[in-house]
Amino acid sequence: LSEEPCHNQDADSELSTLRFWLASVFAHAPTAPVILTATHCDQYDAEQLQMKCLELDTIVEQVLDLVPGIGMQLVHNAEKNLSFFPVDNTRTRFPETVVVLRAAMDIAIRSVLDAEQDLPVAWVLALRRLLHLSEGRQNEALPPVLTFDETLAETKEQGVDDAVELDKCLKALSTAGHLLYFPNAQGTTHQVVLDPAWIGALFADIAHPSRADSDEHVQQEASKGRLAFQSLSILWRSHSLSNDQRDAAVDFMSRLSLVWRQGEFLVIPSKLQPMTPNSTSLAGRSQALVFDFRGWLQSLVDTVLPRFLCKILMNPRITVERSLFRDGAELV
Image (cartoon, rainbow, N blue to C red; front, side, top):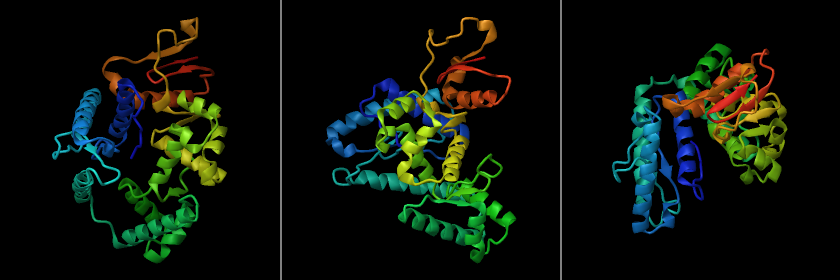
């Protein structure tokens, strides 16, 4: 679930934002059903809404052409013959929009559940316990994060009472989207995020720092796609995170391709600027490794390139990073 405001943006910005997220979904969840929603349709009358929907549908269709394959995942709005679902946030002017969206979500969820095997009873009971625990922690303003051992202690009474069984249970629940658990990932092996929306809220503070009441310098940093790691203490001060929980959150975001850590900085791929002819700074090209992706690869470069670059930057022989862009880079 991504919340990306598109008001006050030009068409190219809207296209780029939507394309990045759909490319990310296609790269990491190529079989998952995708539902696009356009909120706040209650701000228009019926005639205006019809025109806005046609305009937005044209933009969505352009994005679908740029990300081959995602169209097969997209849930079509058969009621309105659109590629997305307009939603009345007030449920007063167009209340039927919420009904249509819920019906589409029910069908999509049933299709996913029908494709999966039934979970063991003990796993279902463990899930209920963890969801209840997540709700309680958030009501107390505590992060919905547990270590693996803490999770095991909570699920023993439900019948999931050894590490091997819990590992299998958490993998299944994570695959189904109930929680987040990435075993064998650096820094996250012993961390379990009980509510995936919590990660989304933390990332929203990075992608839209103005909502986190951050200072102007941090907002400028984030808008360019590169954020000092220490700035997270400013962006996330309302979440009361320990250092371990902060590091775990960043690691989970990295696994979800939302950010990548490079030393004392975080790269935010969706915010990187595009490369221009004057972007590269190195005079002697023989010393540099210059990427400049174009053509068919462009459709997935927003997702693939930054991940590829971060793998390269782990090589100790690469000593200097000169420039990093949404569609290119210059390394020494």
